[in-house]
Length: 212
Image (cartoon, rainbow, N blue to C red; front, side, top):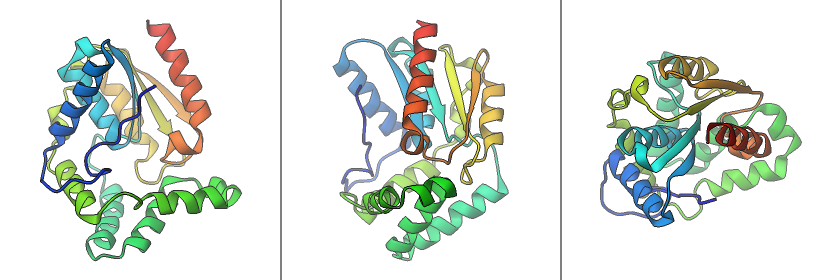
């Protein structure tokens, strides 16, 4: 297993494009030395599909969740409110709201220590300037750059049923755009890998093994 923290989640000073993040992932796969299965969450899910499209020879199969693929007024309002807090420098408020939006209420109530840890982790080892560069790169990337109906590798789409940031209808729509994809629903919040990582891992491994 290889986890990737992309630019913006690690310190950077110079502006970059969203496609640069995909190029970074490609370099990591080349370092691994063989085609890989990719799991991507939220922005990472978009990157996973971008790499799958541009370098299908490097990808065996792909699992994504939390990916928005169509216009959504409610989602747009939520993200504008988040960015407003961030750009005003209200970073503690930003981290608190992101935490609330990332996990289901039941999970937060049952895991107060983990919730506080995640909230602190959001800004740990990250500078506001680096995150701002990441946000700008993501906002300038057009989702139309990915031709979902042309993805040639097996794709599993996860719908998080309690995700307020990217509601389940986005996952349903994404799955409808990708020929041969499968849609799986999990009862948790946006951060599936953190809230229900064992179930996500089980589903992904089963999917990858079936498609090999």
